[in-house]
Figure: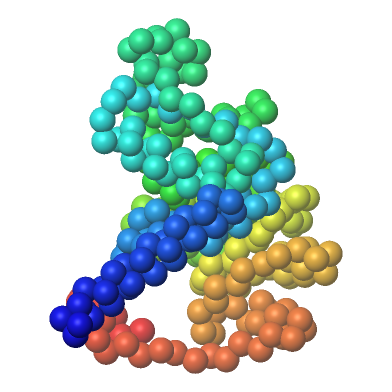
Length: 267
């Protein structure tokens, strides 16, 4: 009888495994569960995207203008993940060759385009990625546009500067996320505009005028948000203002000797 022991044990193991697998499948079907077992989490959305989807209050329709092929399959896989996390998301695919009038209606000029629409707002994206799609959803569902102002006039990093120290790429990134980005010259009008979502003071090299400092102080006192990027020994008035708010700036300098190997500076 011993020679039958191993086959019997194997059969029992297989029966147990199949039983557990069936239970898991029934449970998943009942509660609509999904598991991503890929090593790079190819079929999982980021926590940031899931947070956006969970907060959606408006319906969002995504229209994909594709013919056939890998790009359409990629878009479908991505959109399935979005619809899994939110009932507010709906999507359809339209073949622009078979339905040219629909393509014209949505102002489509190229294949593999996604149109993201909510109410009267509409965005087009040409790169099938989670980042682009989530940003488009945020844009079409946001009430109005939040404006971020970058202070200028004192040697700050410029949002129009495309060079190494410029902030043009940061401006582009913020605009992709649905923000309106503008420069602010307080010398002409010493007052922070109403509705400012964030005031950025990025590395001023010259002292601010007393009226400018007072305007910033008034803005902060009203609950405004500010991002201060200050170099050591460059903005004593702002350092004093921040100290009043409980933030103490030390004039510390970081020395990075390794950057010298790549043609950079020590500081």
